[in-house]
Image (cartoon, rainbow, N blue to C red; front, side, top):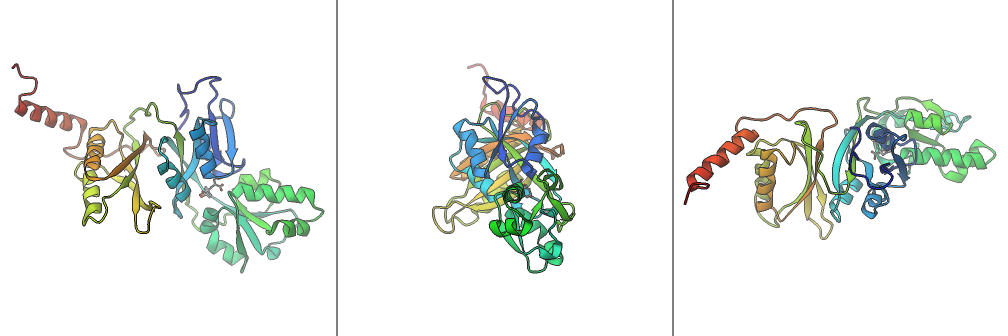
Length: 335
Ligand SMILES: O=C(O)C(=O)C[C@]1(C(=O)O)C=C[C@@H](O)C=C1
């Protein structure tokens, strides 16, 4: 997805993109699919919430953050920060194939590795391979894969030897993207250490509400929906709004609302665009039966897969049905 920012930036004309940094994260790789550093400013932030908040405060025009991993599932920090406070929408997405290396300061031996730092999602994706390579090694959480690599390189520069650096840091190796190991001057101890070679992470481009990206025919719509309390079949009623209009879901997951135990909202990606009649009708249905529906954006799909339109759910069929009812009411007929 190129140029999420087209036509929407005031001032210098250079869009500013906050992202989960530092340089070398998978999120930065996603950002490179969306914008070029030649024409946009890349602003690394320490975590997902800080990147998204930069858009809320106006320090950035857009944020690029991970939302979903094919192995680990949803990124809770992103789902929750989008739902909290409103005022933000998804304007695009990017898919990044994920592969990891186990890397350390030059001179480290694989048999020396006891503590491995990385992002928790990265650890979850490498757990089995790492257990086989370095039995008993433990995870030291980092805010991102590249943050762990940057720390290792930084402390190594200040200390005399590899062991002193590892002692000072509390870890001796990292799990990072291959290019990140290279750029931080680390040595690869083992390549392709992901448990699943076809892992993919999906990232979203978040902006302030305004012009919705035009419909392409290969779009997604992201929503956060709350159900009425203590109502038998409320989940079924909510899902029926999509099913009866032929709207397929590509992701649905529950997130705690946070005010009391047992209250959940549903984070949903539906196929289609707000301008599709069936999606608009679904939203109207949800609005009638659910106490809260947050519209979090309609945007082109990164994989370009076109929305399947089932019999009776095309725009033309909706328009014809509406025209028929208007005719029955005598709408538009002379008084
Ligand atoms: O730490 C990074 O490099 C990130 O971009 C974050 C993140 C994630 O949140 O899932 C992104 C992709 C990988 O799945 C591992 C970590």
